[in-house]
Image 1 (spheres, rainbow, N blue to C red):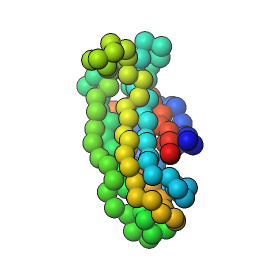
Image 2 (cartoon, rainbow, N blue to C red; image 1 turned 120 degrees about the vertical axis):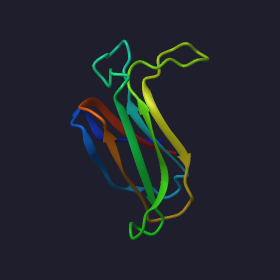
Image 3 (cartoon, helix red, strand yellow; image 1 turned 60 degrees about the horizontal axis):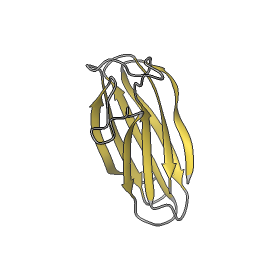
Length: 125
């Protein structure tokens, strides 16, 4: 498993921010994006429940010549609690399978509804 920071932890201004095209290592068949959420340990990260983060992620199977949609959605800020465990959720997780192959890339955008402190990492398996 390899993890790479794609958005440093800082305040991002309202608007759309780019996750640059990033190579996916050969043999990787699962991709995960993890966006920091508000917790009691760090209540300054994405604290407002009315603020949203939306994402649109694409994957390329041909060396970055063309990209296809891989995942998209949005979520609200504030502290979220796992209904089963009762523990705070530290990240918004976007995890999914990707086709095996070589010369693959991913890229995307993250849109903030307001100025939001957060960060994001990508993990490949």
